Length: 146
Figure 1 (cartoon, rainbow, N blue to C red):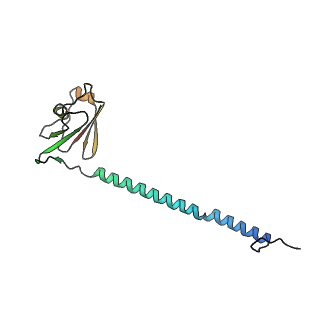
Figure 2 (figure 1 turned 135 degrees about the vertical axis):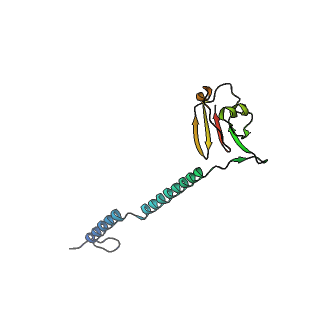
Figure 3 (figure 1 turned 45 degrees about the vertical axis):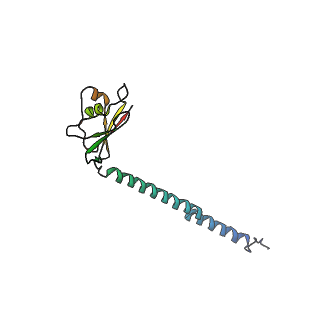
């Protein structure tokens, strides 16, 4: 009986066995393209994790007080104010800083955040209008959102 031969010289039965072995090997071990994709996913995940760690390290670094050229500590007010940089003095409070910075809009702000040592402290603007107050420290950054 004559067996048909494939172009690379194997009988059909042997070629089928070889094809089955190759299929099992690809299933078990994957192909080179899949390994490259997996390696790329690992590299991307590592890079994302490293970037996240760098950001966390930057956020946890101690914020240095802002010092003016004259050597005096400052507080910065970001938002609609006429005077965004205030010299800090003992007893400076958020309400006093808003007055000194000359908050511009006629309406109360939508939100106020004090950043101290890179940690945000959310302040309810209505609480300030009702008489609550918060002490400020050298290097604080007050963000006022209209």
